[in-house]
Length: 163
Image (cartoon, rainbow, N blue to C red; front, side):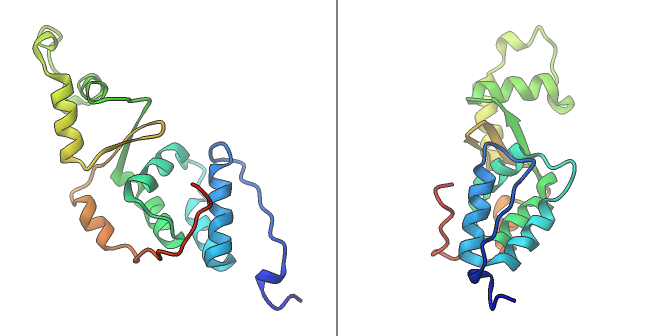
């Protein structure tokens, strides 16, 4: 019977996500955009196989804060790559050579290979960046800029509570 959601106390608990950071982000969205938009976003995040670390990194790479844009990132999460615990360009190069068939090389050649240079090239080519917890990049037929152009403009007044 309350006239609006601002007249109510809203509580929720995530059984997934990392260290309460998503709870703080969601509380900020509830305050700034309302319960309806927050609920729509949460529907996009409600999957059993959601990779919360990758989602957090992708949201940071895309630099989005609004509920609609976070939902769009979640719905296109397969277009992002995330290498957890990668700290530098050399780690990127080693990871790719060791784990991606396209970049496999003979072990004898590794001594002569420029892993940091390859990691830097890959990061630039895929709009990658280091984030808390690893390295995130955009891995799609389109560019990150093309993806970002499809998103709604971010409201500069949105405040996510330090996230």
